[in-house]
Amino acid sequence: MEKQLKEVNVELRKRMTETPNPITSLGVGPELAETILAESGDVTMFAGPEKYSAFCGLDPSEHTSGDSIQGHTPISKRGSPLLRWTMSMSAIIVCKKHHDFNRIFERHAHRGYRYAMIAVAHKLARVIWRLMKNNRDFTKRPPKRTA
Image (cartoon, rainbow, N blue to C red; front, top):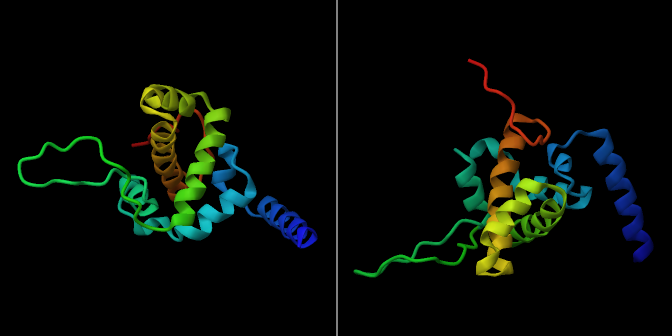
């Protein structure tokens, strides 16, 4: 089984180099990038990055009852559990490779590791939506808008 898994990974890496994928420009490996692409489908069906993040299940859930004050709530966990897990694993990688994502982690780290990683994964989902929508690679600064 290990031999078959290696063969599949070799073939997957070969195909990833043949077809451009904007997610790999974040530093995410081909296995995670392909899983994100496969689970996401066509991103043009989402009206915006917030909708895509909600599809990933990384948006805060809403809980209101009567006169209660809405505080910090857990994530909604809508959508594919595999996509949510893949985004979480990718968040760990981009935190190590990109200073901007690491700053997001550090800003939320006082609330706990999991909370901070979910915040990074939420941001990552929105960035991935933009990369896939515009079919461009990740850069530290987004390209300038043209009129």
